[in-house]
Image (cartoon, rainbow, N blue to C red):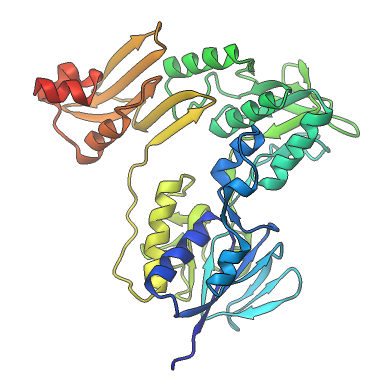
Length: 406
């Protein structure tokens, strides 16, 4: 019987563990698998941290793999013991505890780390990110003892943090540097509808606001802006984006640019080392949504299993969002450009807005607010570059009417 090879996985998050699942489907007996994670838990669904903050789910509800799962699959888990050094010449990783484990194959799934605005006071107690279970626990503790929360960042994550804190009884102000919410996903009319809907739920917004300083001295007490104004704050949550976590790979001499550079098989420049998820750069792109990361896991799992005929191909991804009970869907190029044309439907009484961007006889992008049922259909039209000239007059009214009119 052939001796098993050793696979070490650095990172116990969704991307790494999904890759291990794909590998186990194809070659359950090929490797002795050792997983190192920075957090003291099994693998959990980071996307569901918002419902935990809002009190709708518990931490147990969002666990994807309990410690029993690792044991049942013969996987050695070192939770709360992050890898600090990779020696590629000896093919050994060393963890914070000093533990060393050798590898035949290494999978880096180090994810990303939240970006903290480097303004004066950003390291004060009470200033946190919204990234992991510890952040949620810190927010829940603050909500028990304090009143005023400021969330910096008006994207999806910032709005979800604000909603959770509002549900926990805090007064919440969302501060955003742009002039409209979710400006990466929504056009201005849809963003305005969203803002009005959230204001009715009790949100406060400061747009076009440049944070200059977080005021202390011992704990945060206010946020000051460049115009000299300030708002009271007992808690500041920064939700201003993430950066790929590539420091470990860089220190090991792996080729990195904006993130760890991988090829179509998710292999780094070292053929024994693979990488998946938010820490990777593939053909100049980096990734933050689940759909492309699941595709990466499938391809990488196959190559680790020795069934390596698959190649990772980037696909357009749709953003379907449910921000505090408001349905949104956005896909493709919703800004438009030279020669593009807009089809717009507004129904303010029912709170519905739809905008399709056409380039010639093809759909190039879509923004839907309030009624998102046809989102996947529009996505399909964009993906397949379908000629829509025959159904152009009915396109805004959705698939059912277009099918009847055909």
